[in-house]
Image (cartoon, rainbow, N blue to C red; front, side, top):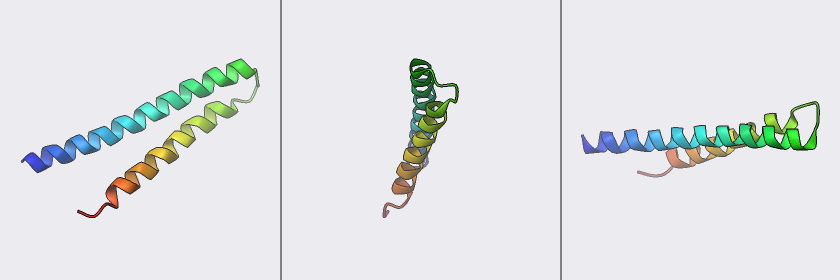
Length: 67
């Protein structure tokens, strides 16, 4: 039972980290696009994708650990 709780907490932590990185990426991209004044929202698209890549890299690294 304790191992199940540990797994749930590990997955919840990874999910929370993914959501926070995506939210920060959207917020930062929106602020930067408004500051620069471009009509095309380049950073609004780029930063969340970068956050997704970083999160997926961390998830793959976590799952590839030897148990």
